[in-house]
Image (cartoon, rainbow, N blue to C red; front, side):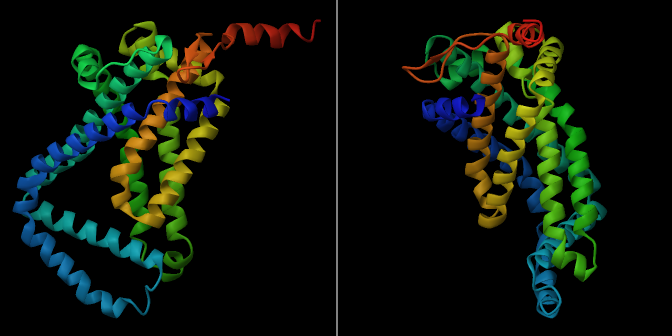
Length: 307
């Protein structure tokens, strides 16, 4: 029911999804500008490695005529470019790494907080506010939340990068053909699912209860512990669909699918937290939900055997 209500809330708040999409495009544009000096500095390194990969691919096609072989080629190419660039200018490589793994996720996390704040107003009393109005109004709280969550997620980023490249650079043709795509897929799905589940109600707790970042995390974790099975299942299914779609369509689809998935998960987070607190909420202009508080559900589960 929580997930179905999230879908209904998603359908009735398309303008918020569009605003998040535009904000993500803006964030990507800023990131691209910051990475422009890196691209210009390593333009020769990138071109040389790409041209070399294109030349050798003719000989490797006989052995690597599978999607797994293609993935191995992509991972090898990225690893070679990064290695050569690091030898040429280590400082710029570190700078690029910080921009991609800290600055961009930081901007994305600010957007998540703003969307959750906008959803709170709509779910509580159907109020509709501007994205940038909420952005500037909640800047002091959203920046702190985004900073903490970004560094929290760095552990998962490190695990994903290390794991994916560990299997992606394996040269065994049999492994590449039969197991590499599946291994990469499973690593991405499991890592992203666990990362998201562990922070499901962090922002909603801060917004609804008006508490600090650390208290919001603890209160959110308590809610997730009681809804762990549901949160794990929903996030797992969504990330399976997300990465399967990316596999089929290509990485360019991420420009559209990432904001859509983020908005839907924010709505799931808010509904999960509202439900845990027994708070009434709107899912559209006509339907209002009145869930029971978790404590009431727990009491019923304990007393039904006595009765």
